[in-house]
Image 1: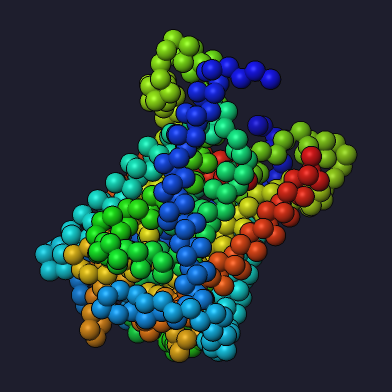
Image 2 (image 1 turned 180 degrees about the vertical axis):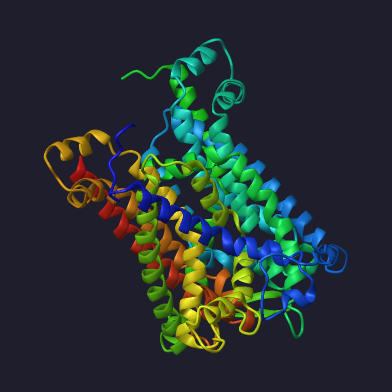
Length: 279
Length: 300
């Protein structure tokens, strides 16, 4: 890895591109976080300041006590965690079958999964709406958990299959010969060895559920079942947009995910690579 | 050929293991898409007892094809998809190449690039809304301090400017993701190829077009495919940033479909729009997948 080829004759140009890009990425994000602790006068001042002169937590208080932001967070947590758990269990079973067992039509199944994962949600929204209404499930947790599970399964299966395929076959064959059932083999032998795959699949699924807006807006429109994205999108006041309150809520919604993703960075990047290599 | 008992058991187990996932995927994606096709051929009325269907053939399609906003939204979405994906790929490639050298801080760079990806689109849209705000937004302030503009600009107040502003927000959020995909593709290219090129006296520029670009084409194609298909579902960003306006100038097809379905309560024409969108997406995906295959074939 020593003498890496360079398009840019000098490393310095690489550094300039890099620093410029990092500034552009971080600046708007910083602006949002910093606005959430600024005073009202400072937020609507025509001469914005880079640092808050009189930092305040009042917007956080307002977001949680007046706008019930904690409620949106709770809804988002319930829907995202449940969907992620179901996706991981179903994906573990399916990926094991695809990676190991002699079933027909594996290649078409994988192509089919890839196609499904790119389908625009608008293509399925009206029938799902009619069915959910018929079942009386509009404005419920399952109205989101079921579609989130379906839309995130393909990628989870895709990623986990890659990891399963990397585990020596002899391990599970030995377990099977010793009389272990398929399920025992998956949960006792394979999954512990495929933890990175589990993490990758789980993080991608969780982030997708946490950020999803379209289904959440259409299916769960009443306040009691709104998730964070819907809560923030419909936050507008009657005359002005309450930026302080909105960004306080947004910061709370975003920071934990940013931290989780940074901690598990390695596996997130691995997931992207799986997409790039397998494509 | 004799099939052992264990093997047959394995095959049955295989189908049983894959069945739950396929069932959920089928119920929530395949069935609704097929049902959508049927719905789009009906006049649909929502009544107290639920929805009532009356078969009316291709009437809904005739309606939407004669509905000017449909073509406008389709045109806007196509233009938006092509422009943003092109910019994202170009910028993403530039940054990926910069990162694909032994420079310090690469780990931090990759970490920071993950931030926009984790951000809820609705939140990043509100964030940009505040940045573009005409009277106290920071963008006007900076540009006026630099004397690039003399008076505040209404970034979201006029069709072309609003489109460009929306594209900037989109490029900001998505380019890092494209960069990471391209970077992982770059890292698969063997360094030996470049060593050989150097010995042969090839310039960096030549090496890029003869080695990097051809070998990276599958990664570029994949990133382009995902981004273009995603762009056809564009909804969150305009919903918050521009509300599709001014007028309906920044209304993409998914948002128009949403409005026809849930604001105007016209399920027949709305579903016909959705089916048309899915049709376009499937055709695009097939073209891309085929192109990618032949490319991979050429390389091997």
